[in-house]
Each structure stands twice: as C-alpha cells, then as structure tokens.
Amino acid sequence: MGGGQLGRMMALAGRPLGLRFRFLEEKSPAPVDEMGERVRGAYDDPEALDAFAEGLDVVTYEFENVPAASTDRLEGRVPLHPSPSALAMAQDRLHEKGGFARHGIPTAPHRTVDSLHELREAVEELGLPAILKTRRFGYDGKGQKLLREDGDLEPAFDDIGGVPLLLEGFVDFRRELSILSVRGRDGTCAFYPLVENDHHQGILWTSLAPADVTGKQQATAEGYARSVLEEHDYVGVLAIELFDTEDGLVANEMAPRVHNSGHWTQDGAVCSQFENHLRAVCGLPLGSTEVVGFSAMENLLGTVPPVSELLAVPGAHLHLYEKSPRPGRKLGHVNLVGDDRAAVAARLERLKQLARPS
Ligand code: AMP
Image (cartoon, rainbow, N blue to C red):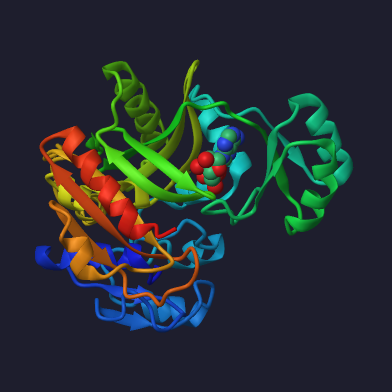
C-alpha cells in the first residue's frame, strides 16, 4: 500500500527475486509507475481496497498511517505484514510512548494536551524548551512546534492544526541514531548496525553507518527493537529512532516499515532493508545484515544536482525517485561506500557541496 519512493525501492529489490507487485496509490504520477500494476484509489476507499487485495499473496505498506478500517477490511482475506497492532502503535505518539514504556525503553517526558489550559499546565511540569506535537499524522518534522518561552505557547497551539496533542520535554541529545531491525515469519530477528543521522528542519539529511558506538549501545538498541518486534509478532523491517544522551539511549519514534535511515543498506550491506523486508513478509529466509564497508547516505532535497557530477564522486551510487522538484521534497539519495571511515567522510563533504547549494 502506497506508491512513493519506498514502494519503488521495494519493487526494485524484489523484482530480481521473482516477486511481482501491485500498488494501491491515488496520486499520479507516482514513483512506482513503472514498477508493477497499479490500483488507483484512496487508502480508505472500500472498492479500491477490494480490487487491490484480489488475488494477492501478501500485503505490506510503505507508510504507517494506513487507516484501521482499511486493515480491518483486508484482514482475513490476505496476510498483512507488519501486524495492524504495530501500525496502531506507530500511528499515535501517545500509544507509541506507552508501548516503549511497557518494555522499559526510555522516552522523552511527555504530557497529553487537549486545550491551551492543559498546555500551560504541561509546560509548568516539563519546563521549557519543549516540543508540542500532534499525536497523529506527524512526519519529517511536520506537526510539531518548538516552544522556547511562554509567549510561544498560544501561537503554537493555534497554528498546529488541532488536538489531540502531546507535549514532549526537550531531550538534550549528543546525536541521533536509529536501529533497523527485521523479523521473519518464523520469528528469526536480524539487526543492522546503529546508524548516525543528521536532520535539517526535521527532515533526514545524512546517515552514517555503522555509527561509531560501543558494543553495549548496539546491544541495548537491539534489545529495544527485539522487544517491540516480539510483542507484535512483527514481520518485516522496523526502524526505531533514538537519541544518544548522557544517560543512555532514549527512543523518539518508530517506523513500522523500511526507513530513510536504512537507505545506505542498498549499497553498504550484504542484503538491503528493502530486500530483507520482502524476504520477511514473503516468508523467505532473511538475508545477511552485515556491512560491506563504511557508508554515508545523503538525501537530495528539493533539487537534483547534475547526475554526471554526483557520479564523479568515487564510490557514489545514485538512487532517484522520479519525483518532480519542490522545495524540501525528497527526490533521491546518494549512497557512498568505502573501506575507510575517513575517506568516506571526505567524499561526503564533496557530495554535500553538490547536494546542498548555498
Ligand atoms: P520526529 O518527527 O518526532 O522524528 O522529530 C523530528 C526531529 O525533531 C527529530 O529527529 C529531532 O531532531 C527533533 N526532536 C523531536 N522530538 C524531540 C525532543 N523531545 N527533544 C529534542 N529534539 C526532538
């Protein structure tokens, strides 16, 4: 379900395995246009859902906001992976934090907010700075406002677009990390090494993998991911975004799908997150999550620099999504792979000069 770049890259990984795809996507054109059959319709359109599900072996998603009514309609007719319960956890920031807490996974301190009065009370308890977030439908920094001083409260509450909301205490992190994990239908789990992520205005800009972390941090992150995977009898790739703080790893949010911070695996791991997600949902053996060197991934946001210049950077692999340019839009990414961390970092600087014109 979904016809964006994640669906496209799943198809590109799955076609060599002999898999065939049908996409449910309303928008046209879409990055999946050349990748398989298409049912045009909204994700909550019963007729489109019926036409989409007809004859499929398995349904998976490229985004977490699939309406519960849609998964209810499909359930029992075709296997759905990951489970609707994992989708439900990821769809609401309050449930998500509750889910993390059940497993002892630390999260930012938070309070629910349904009125300006409750926002003022929550700020009294958590202090400033703090971040006001919509509980549902937030992504890439959308649906959130940073509150620095008391005067920010009312405008933020008015502008954010309606309740229910969550106020989160500001986490003083050293850097942002993510763990990409995958669980097969037989319960086998595999984990990629932790990734270090750099964001720009809430949108992922660069990932470095493997992140320079201790074995203990890797084990902690894997333990967090495993507990969520097992609770939901989860099948497929799960990403958890983490803050690296002085007191340890703090979970920010999870994505029950392939994730932008795992794009480096296309060129930097034995088996990519896309292939592993498909292997999992199709009941096939999982592929190796071993890395093949040091990787950097740079998103191409808003514009695509000349292809010949990007490809002139040694070790660069270009992945374009066939989307039309728009400011801040994810149009593609470049993966850099090499044997040496410092050499990859140097080439990344060159790539940044091309990809982020001042
Ligand atoms: P999100 O949409 O929740 O992933 O937030 C987007 C970005 O905002 C994150 O990647 C962080 O850089 C920042 N952010 C979100 N929540 C917090 C928080 N509680 N404390 C500090 N920074 C945050």
